[in-house]
Amino acid sequence: MFYTYLWLREDGTPYYVGKGSGNRAYSKHKRHGNAPSLDRIVLYIAKDEQDAFDTEISLIWYYGRKDLGLGCLRNLTDGGENPPKGVRKGSKMPEWLKEKLIILSIGRVPWNKGLKGTCKHTEEGRAIISKTHKGRVPTPAMLSALAKRNQGNKNTLGRKHSEESKALMRLHHNPNSSIRRKKPS
Image 1 (cartoon, rainbow, N blue to C red):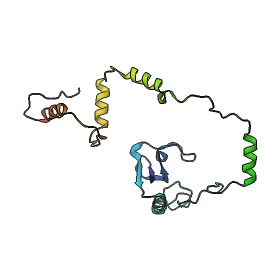
Image 2: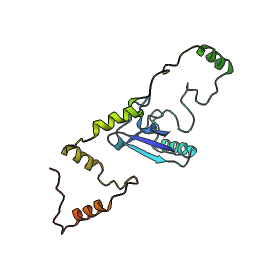
Image 3: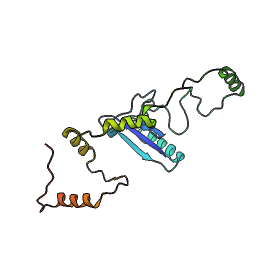
Image 4: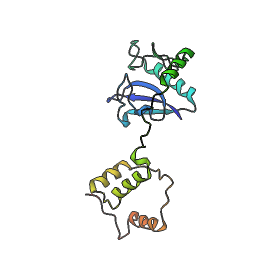
């Protein structure tokens, strides 16, 4: 999935427009530093990569580039596939250089050879994590933070409630019910 993203200053004005996929909008950039907080990132989902490039070009044109004195964005290009000067994006490596790199790599041991995956990806690691969380009782502060974070979230991620839990929820939400949920203090 491709998208165009807009990074906003604390006052809500945009300062950078980019095209990305995956977690690009939330990761550190060499020139622009760390990504802002999640509430200051705007995403424009694209149907394909070209649509994302077109949106990027449009947003840069609309808000204007600071280096040209036309607006508030720190972008150094007009968007699309044109990289900044000195960047060889899309250029092919010469055959002589490929051959040289192959010769230099013969006999070298990869840095990660023999290393096992991170703990959480192994069965043993999953068992350790599961054991540490089993029987753990969340504190009232944790519960209120989770409730605040999930407030208004309609996404149940495919989870189904049992008939018993549905009946309890109906009782808790019924104003005439004698069973009322305790409010967190």
